[in-house]
Structure formats: structure tokens, C-alpha cells
Image (cartoon, rainbow, N blue to C red; front, side):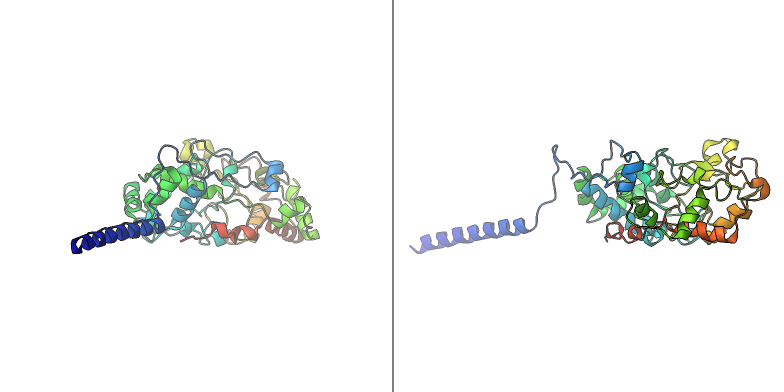
Length: 367
């Protein structure tokens, strides 16, 4: 009888141990094992009404569809300094949301304390860049390609992709996040840049006062309306050739121009990429959106204020061999706006700024 009681007690203890193990397991789910049928959750871009009205659909590569898991991973990577050589610098270090994803400094400073030679470009509405050329000089051919360079650039993150991938692979969080986003915990630089590109494609800005005016949702001031007329007037602002009009809400043609900055070209821009001397001194037209947040201006950040930019086109144009034919007033040094016209043009340009973009909680640091 005593022996039987001991046996029952041992069975009871075993059952309790198994129950406890099962209970613990149910509270701590196993990592996802995607298997062949695993598909991340699709998350198409939300296209703003003003873009729906005037622009083609955004370009999404067939091999990198937008997903909830991919965007979340890309957002974490964008803000994580793990990709840099010393773990101190992230993409967001030079592309800050408060500055419309650019840098308030003329030249960003890398991990070794060295300055670059160009102002970091703001990041938004990138999925509508139909010529698929990125950076000021067009050297990257996709958003994914654009995300590759800074990691290995000796002036920026000064790392190797081999080291960056090893850091991600050995982290406690990233293998599982890649597993969820791409169905594999084997991290590569290609998957890393795909995730970053997915997040960057979500950075859409289309809610400025001028956008709402075009949609009939608000009115503009008389000064802003006159500023738009100056912008469109070939005899005054003559800005629309490179920066579009009310039917082109990107406010850039995404084309490369020599806009009369220097008589002698020292930074060849697009010419460095194509090798064609006829491209020397040409840089991508930046979007005019969010100018309230993106100072300093031009590819080299030479203009500290928007007034400086307007003054350049008004009386600061200079001739060089590859000057764009659209700089029609170069022989006169510029279009020579009156001071009231300059003020009105500035008011219109600022009406293209979108405070909801820089404050969007979906774009902020998740870490």
C-alpha cells in the first residue's frame, strides 16, 4: 500500500511538471517558423488624394512589396546606430524627422568627425521618383541602392557591410524581425536595404496648406496667391520649369540642372556619374516641399535662408559652360524681382510646408 502511494505521488509530480511546462510555453510563444506558406502582412502605401488626382501610382519593386513587418523592421533599422562602424550613427542622424528627414547642418558629420561635401537630401515622396535616380548626382538607381552607400562611405558610417550584417545577426532582436519580414533569419545587406527602403517609401508628404487649397479645403492669403502667380510667371519667378505647378504636386521634375551657382565648376555632380562633361555641374532639382524645415539649401548647403535662394535667382545667376537653358536670365544675373515680389514668392513657397509630416508618429524613432 505504501509503495502504491509513492508511485501515485511520482505520477502526480510528473503530470504537474508537464502542465507547468506547457503553461510557461503558452505565455512565451516560440519564434515564427515561416515555412513555405509564410506571407508577411501586405501594407500598400496610402496614396494622398492630391497624388491620386495628378500623379501615377507609386512605384513598388515586384521583389520588395510593402508589408507591415518589413516597414517596422526598416523603421527600426533607420534609427538604429548598429549599422555604423562604431555603433554611434544611424540613418536618422543625418535625416532627422524634424528637418523633413534632412540635416540642419550644411554638411553632416560622420563617425570619425569628418564633414561631407554635400548637404543631405530630405527624404519624402520617393516612390514617385519616376526616373529612379537618387542622391544629388543620381548615382543610385533605386531606393534600395541608395541605402547601400552610407554604411561603407568612409566619411559617413565608415563600416563594411560584412561587419554590419554580423552585428545584426548576433543581436537578440534582429534575426527574428528579419524572419517575420522576409521569412528567413539569415540576414543579408540586400534584405537590410529592402527593409529600409520599405520604411522610406512610407515617408509621404502631401498635407500642406497649398495641398488643402487645391482640394478646396482651405484658402490662401492674397500674398500666397500672388506668390504663386510670380512662381508661374516666366517674366518674374519663372520657377515652374524645374519645380512643376499645381498639377505636379511633387514640386520637382527629378531632373538634373546646372542652375548658375558657380562660374568654375569644382563639383561635377551628375558629370562624375555619367562621365559626360556636358553633365558637369548638374544636380537634381530638389522638391520645394517643406522648405520651412530643410535649411540650408542647394546641394552644398551654401544658402542659409530661403531669402538667399530667392536672391540667387533674382540677381545671383552666373554663367558656366553647362548652364541650363532654363536659366534664361543669366545674362542679366537673374530675373530681378522687386522686394515685394520676393516676399510674396517666399510666402507661397512656405505654403508648401507640411507640419503633419514632420510630426507624424509613424515616422518617429520606435526604439
